[in-house]
Length: 146
Image (cartoon, rainbow, N blue to C red; front, side, top):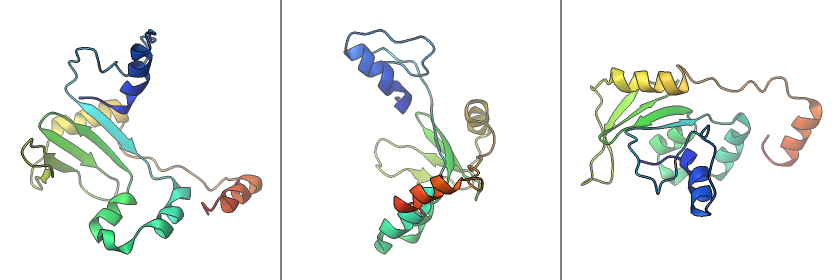
């Protein structure tokens, strides 16, 4: 299993450079023993209006709602655990035979929840954008984010 944090050490390793031991990731050419990877996405408030303007209505309500949702996720070889502030966590079974993960609505995986809390924290904090200064707000408006 690989993660985005593996990009930096992988690029350095492929170029023949060493990377600091303080880096979270590993070069993917190494023999890895990782049994889980994490992901976190916090929807930027300024991106929401841009997404609304540029998303085609034909994509379906469920997918559209997922694009506007912050989330935390841990993935293992067999399962994916996704939690959002808006709804209960969902456990998915990952199958090599089926390209679409299968949701297991009645399954709970407290061990996966514990992994997320230990690595990413409990709960997703949305950024506070109420204290923007006038110049920053004007720049964001000119760029089309507001």
